[in-house]
Length: 81
Image (cartoon, rainbow, N blue to C red; front, side, top):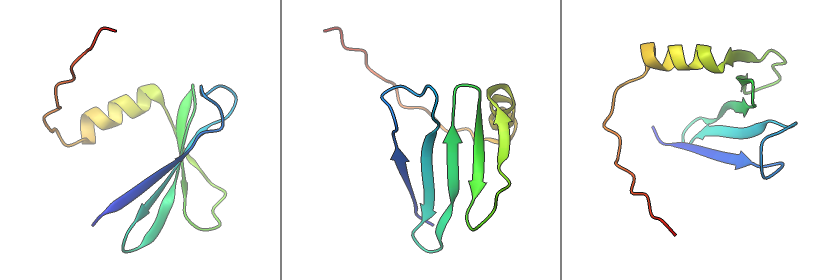
């Protein structure tokens, strides 16, 4: 299943507004919207739901460590300018 994510940037730096990432699948359409802020992240499911799911950054780190699938990370190269 292919996925698509689009980002709406309200400012150059996330301050008072959340970073919004809309997540879709090519087959089923919109899954929901991920809202990222300085203090937490929230998931707003598709449809007319008014109930968001919230995780603090600490909770997110614990969840991804417990539930995330390990994959090999690509090495990044730092370039001095």
